[in-house]
Amino acid sequence: MSVRCLIIDDEPLAHEVILAYMADIPFLQNVGQCYLATEALTFLSMQTVDLIFLDIHMPKLSGLDFIRTLQQRPLIIVTSAHQEHALESFDLEVCDYLLKPFRFERFLKAVNRAQTQLNLRKPSAGTGPEQDINPVSGPNFIYVKSDKRLVKVPLDDVFYLESLGNYVKVWGQKRFILTPRTLISFEQQLPPGSFIRIHKSYILNKEFIHYIEGNTIFLNNGSQVPVGKNYRHLLSSDSPLTL
Image: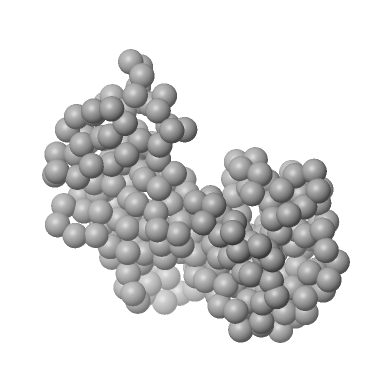
């Protein structure tokens, strides 16, 4: 599968380095280069991409603020000379964070991780036994990749999902499954009537709510899940948390 890539960086040298690395990775396809995040907004309004290589410190609009403007986010690999933004970047669910200057081996590791996540999002066009199965979801279940297996998980058994950077914990009644995906990819695929995002790091199955106290939701298995400050409106009288 070809991965369509966009470079966003105000430094021409950064473009040269990434393009040189991309030339040695057959599945990467360069479809655009922008030197300002504001230019990239226009580009993305006309074209879709799978992966963005994104700098943080740019004029007019920073890389992190750019991410916040996106409604439908491609995978994003941050390429920055400033390590202090790593935690905030992972809070925004970036795929990886490359600290400039980075070597080809580290770049390759990042794009391989991105390709893995894209393969989980998109059904393969092959004919093998696993490729005949939709690895994302069905009416009442999801397939979750764990190690080298696809595990079928009934939605009725999922209490909540927890983001851990480039991974998500899918919490069931007796265990959790750790899978290399982003929380936003689950959010786009789970039925909104049953599942709701209540924190930047949590999606909740409303069926298992026991009670709500303050900014904490208590589940009927004894778990506690926080409500993020940007999601507190869900606790209002006409809350979508109500089934």
